[in-house]
Figure 1 (cartoon, rainbow, N blue to C red):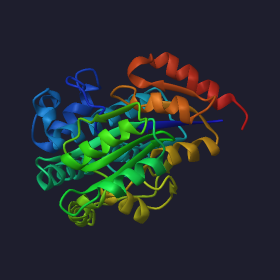
Figure 2 (figure 1 turned 30 degrees about the vertical axis):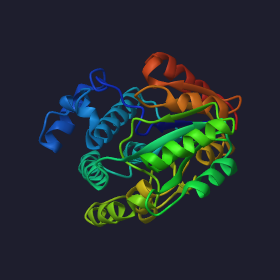
Figure 3 (figure 1 turned 120 degrees about the vertical axis):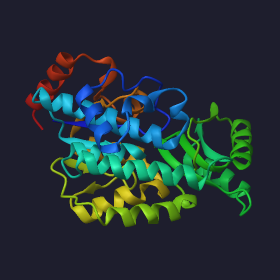
Figure 4 (figure 1 turned 90 degrees about the vertical axis):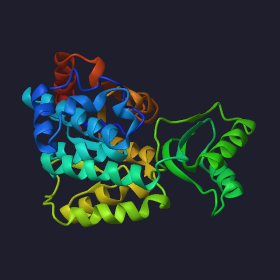
Length: 306
């Protein structure tokens, strides 16, 4: 049997999230960025998209390195949105220093494109067709709103203008949604609104060397395995403006034999999703699991027949 290390996206961040990760990784990030990375995780700093994305990258890479230092490695990696960047680093396809510079630019481009009035909202309790119908009813050029994430059968995220999201959320509650909650994300990710920033990021990618992933890398956008550098470059550069199919990505991993699901820091957002998506598989969060427990779980999974 196999294992997968998954990396969360925006919304999982919390103040102080870098204080307990590998100090060497944080110091390396500080040197590359030319600033003290430890200041990126304050409550005030995390109001900025750039700081959030850098913190998630640093925390994810630190966790992956901790596993490697204990001679532990998962068979698969996948990342939700910004989580794709630490996933690519963990897969040996993208250098950490290049990821830091790209994510710094990515966060800046996204926050500058929509400094206010836009964001993302999670809707729980309705299936995808029901939400898509609500979006069609409320969509307009002046107040756009789109389907952004398919996280589970009855958990989706929408993105767009605040007023349009509010209308969709209210109608969703009237249709039986158990929750419609505005997320701690200040930009309308994973929709056409970010196509121009994605194009600019793609230009920066032309100056960065990538190689084929050395571990199975599953795209959080199209839920498929990426095997070559050119496809990975496209996946990373444009995932900000593409729908996230996390449900499909985890189904792909499960069908390929993954039974142990480990979530990189911070928190357990993907762990909670994984319990539903992974069936009888084991799902744990790095933040709340001792390294010796992770080692035992990984060794056990390695010993299981396929």
